[in-house]
Length: 219
Image (cartoon, rainbow, N blue to C red; front, side, top):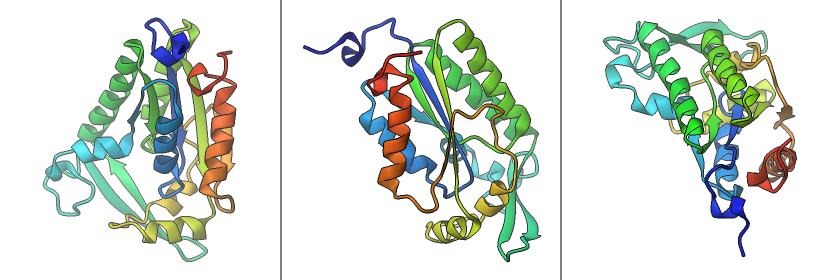
C-alpha cells in the first residue's frame, strides 16, 4: 500500500528546490533528474523556461530585437584574464516585470500545494532577493520546505560545455565571477571533476534529509 506522501494526499507540505549557478554548470540536467526521482509531482520552472515565453522583440537572443533595451539583452564585457569571453544579460524594465511575475508564479504553485524545482534564476539581486523573501515567509508559516543549491565549475569547464550547446551564449564564465544569487545556500557543489551521476546522488541524499518527497522526513 502506498503511503500518504506517495499517494499525493492533500495537505502535505510542498517542497521548493532552488538550483543556481552559471550557465552550463548542470542545473537543468539535475532538475530533470529530481523530477524523475521525486515521489510527488515536481514542476520545473526557471529562467530558461521564462526566456522561451518571451516575445522575440524582447528577447536577448536577438541583438537587433526591437524592444531588447527594455527586455533581455546580451551585453559584452570583454575577455577574462585567462582568455575567456565575458558576456552577460541586461534586464530592462519589461524584463524585470517578467522576472517578478515568474517569482509570483512559483509562489502560486507552492500555495496550491504543488512542489517546484526552480531551474536557475536571473543574475538580478533584487529579483532573487524577492523570491527568497517570499519563500522565507511561506517557510516561516510552515507552508513549504525550501532548499537552495549552488552549482559551480571552473572556467575552462564552463566554456567547453557551453560550446557544445546548439546556440552557445557564452555567458557562463561571466556569471561564475558574480556573487551567488542567494544569500542562503544549503548545498554547494563544484561539478568540474565529478560525474553527473555523482552530482545527482549527492543532491538526492541531501534532499532526502529535508523533504519527504525524496524519502526523508521534513525538519
